[in-house]
Amino acid sequence: MKKMTIFAAVTGIFLMGSAAAVSARESATVDIKVDGLRSGEGNVMLAVMREDMTRRDWSRFDPGSVEWSSVIVYAAMEESSTDGTEFKIEGLPEGEKLYLYLFHDENGNRRMDLGENMMPREGFVTGVGEIIPTLTVTGGEQEVRLTMTYL
Image: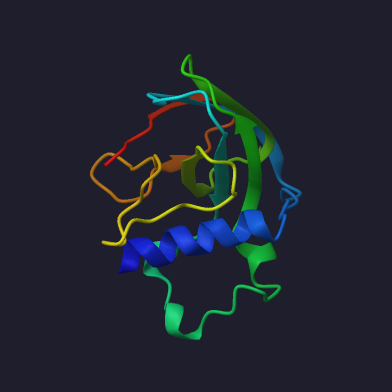
């Protein structure tokens, strides 16, 4: 149930058309490369957040609140490609730990489609040893390579 709520929240970010401003401590550029897409259909959706949304008390969370502006660092979508999809994020605050939420929106409806068993029908990215991939911004240029997972 927790996974479904996370995907619903990330989907909400894109449906609201969020584009969060980066903090004033601008110093780093991160290139995120996503491989393993099973098709070139649709888009890859990315949200970079300051908070691990898996740890949030969802019973009291209002997705329409201004609270999103303090959590979202960056949100974007790029066209899918079986050769990989790339995001370049400039001006990230050095030293900050960020959480990367990505999914492959194959049908272009801007939301994570779930099956009857509430498992994702579309691709998503998980972290190594954790549910959500994380990134600690080190400054300068950084590259992050991630692989899409399909169930």
